[in-house]
Structure formats: structure tokens, C-alpha cells
Length: 451
Image (tube, rainbow, N blue to C red; front, top):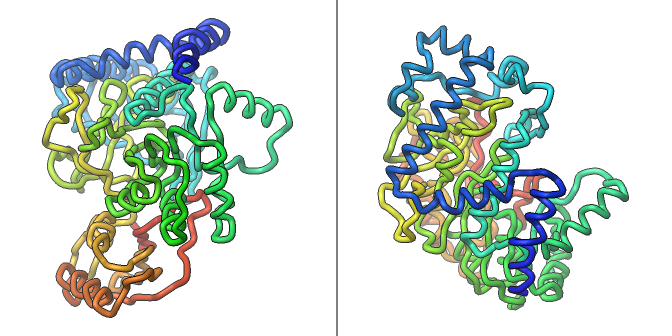
């Protein structure tokens, strides 16, 4: 199998991707593999050089930015540091919807590809991208997943969302060939239920993957079922969680069930892979040679300690550039360097959705990460979901496992009261199950309050 991996990565795939399809992905992969080992100062210098080039392009080619920056009294020549850059206005989903045509580069708008994302709010967002930027995103994805052992051609099973609708025969055949060449198998997580768990376990034993990649929610549900039923499955070399934050308590469940290390990743459809863990798993390396990722305080200014709203700039999508795009996520930058020696900076954690921060009448704002962090040590707590529908009320749904006692409930009430006082009532509900979202995710903290 190792021989096939080498043949695919160094001969077959470059010949197909770079030769037959005329894509630059293999060349970008080689460059990104080198750049990750640059010193931190060299990564920052490379990032800023690429940022300056993008800003000058936007000033010439993108009507929306030229108009917004002129209104703010800022021109690209004024941006001499990231401190200067922080004075540019952020870009929101509403800005994109209201100004979609003006955010496209005039000379490239007829050659863009398009994707769409619904996001957690359910409001569709359509965005354009250039072929080069997509090739680069694929290259960065292979690099980041490779840190967790997911190399091209290595036997990999995806616990992923299946296709929506009825794919054509040609599309199904194309997928079948692609998966065979790349040694991949897909299990559709959208059909997961209590009665079908054994089928998923059997499929893992049948395929015997070296790597399992999956949405965090379905991975956790399958892991809980394996532990509850004493079922052991083929042990992969690694597990990669994707599409949502992997909380520490979830990592522990997955690793116990599969007997393999679990790796956290962070991405979104607008940019693909943003950050991922290396072999040391001491934070997520930001792809800073490809993106600029900031965390912002409520006033929109960068912070370097504590949780902040994520703002992202794709340094290579010249067709429909997103400059300081706030995607609704919260994250915390790390202060320590990783012992791996890569010069790419670290996120200490991805803290969930900004919309899912919990608010109280007293003005407290708790990041969505608070509850999984607090509840991780509760004995017998199999699964939970915290929902806020009113400012003065929190509803906690609890799936009880063996070991959950009155003392467990007392601990939960006591810890919430310690942080929130009497400003919000906590109502606990015992339920048999907590369903995944339509996209196959498990949202552990949900705020239904208006922003």
C-alpha cells in the first residue's frame, strides 16, 4: 500500500492533475510543503507581501472595496502593517449579499466558479472563486490532513454527508472511480440512527481504513454506541474531526471507542481548510501562508488573548476577494509555539459560533465553549444540548448514561449558578436522544436569540 501511495502522489496524480487537466495543484503542494517550515517571522513577511499585492488588486479591480475604503479614508498605500490593516472595515454576509456583483473583480467576473453555503443561520450565501484559488485550497487541504496521517492514496473512510437529491449515473460513476483511485470510501452520516449503528461498525470492519474522517457529531454518536455496546472495530491510525469544533470531551469519547488519536480541524465552505492540528495536537496551525486569520473584539479590533470573532482574508482569491470576512465563528489564538518546528501560527481553540454565545439580562456573554468545558466531567452524561430561547432562561437537554445521579444534576446547577448567578434560570430536561442537524452536525450550544 505504501508503494501505491508513493506512485499516486508522485507519478499518477501529478500526471493527471498537472498534465492532463492543466491544474497547478501539484506545484502549489510542493510550495506549501516548503513554506510551512519557514521561521515565524518569514511566514509573517510572506503573508504581508501577499496581502499587499491583494489589496492593490482590489483597489484597481473591485468596485466595492474601492468605494468602502475611500469612504473610510484609507488607500492600499496607507497599509504598512497589520495594525494599519485592522482599520479596514470588516466584510459580513449581508455585505456580500447586498453587493455581490461589486465584490467581483471586473476583469475576472466572467471566469469564476461558484459555491454556496447555508451556514448555521440557514441563509444561503453564494460566492465566486478563481481556478487558481481553488487549486491552492485543495493543496492546503492535503497538507493539513497529511499532518494527521491522511496522505493521498492512504486507505480512508469518510463518515460524511451524502449527496442531496438523486445524482446522475455519470456523477455516480465519476465518484466511484475517484474514490477507488484515492482509496476512499464514503459512509453517509445523514442516514445514521440507533437501529443502523451496527451497519456503520460493520462497514468499518469490512473496509479496514487506516484513517477515518468525519463530521464530529456523527463520530461522537458512533463512538458512544460502540462503547455502550462493547463493540470493538478495526483500529485506524488516526481519526480526523471536521465540519465543527471537536471539544475535549468529544475527543476523549472518540479516542476511547476507536483506540486511535483524534485530530481537530477548522474550516468553512468559503475557504475550505483554515487550520488543523499537527502530530503534537497542541493547537491548530493556521494556514498563514494562504490565509490571514484575525480574532476580533466587539469593536472589530484584533486581539491576541481570549476568545474573539474570526475574520479571514483569502490571499489568493482574486476573482471575488473576501477581505476581513467575519464568518460568525469564535476562536482563541495560542501564545506558545508548537514543538513541531513549523512556522505557522496556532489557534489554541475554536470556540463555536458567535451566534451561539450565551447572553444574560445582567450583560454576561459566555462563549459557546463554556458548557462543553464545564459538562465534560459530569459522571454519566452521555449527550447534551444547551438552548437559549429567552434572555432569562436556559434549557439543557440531557441524555443520561450509566452513572448519572442526583449529584450530577446538583453539580450542573451549582456550576451554572456560580457563573450566571440568578440572572437566568436553568431548566434541565431528560431526553432519549438529541438529533443531529439537517447537515449531520451536533450543535451542543444553541442560541435562538436575535443578534
